[in-house]
Length: 107
Image 1 (tube, one colour):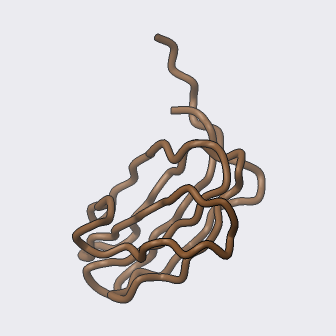
Image 2 (tube, helix red, strand yellow):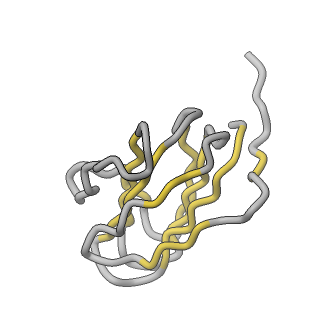
Image 3 (tube, helix red, strand yellow):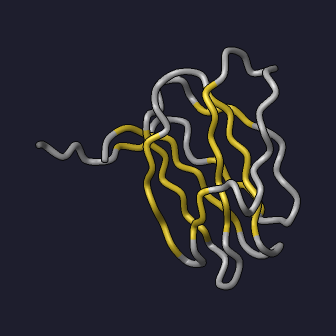
């Protein structure tokens, strides 16, 4: 099995301020298959949810602490989100720091 190095997509990262209310749904590039998730908070746990959709107007469930993928304080992870149209939401355990979402491809 070969490992493909992570390559960020042109256009840069998306920064979402950590907060205790779910963010509005936002789209990710259809060619993005992996996202790097960086939580800049020293104390808050950030949570991320990404759903495949048909259109950007499609309703998606808002992320909650119970349904989101946790990103611990001062940590970075990469997750596969699949190709195609998708929307994401984010929430955190406290209003501290940011969740930086870096769309890309690879491992």
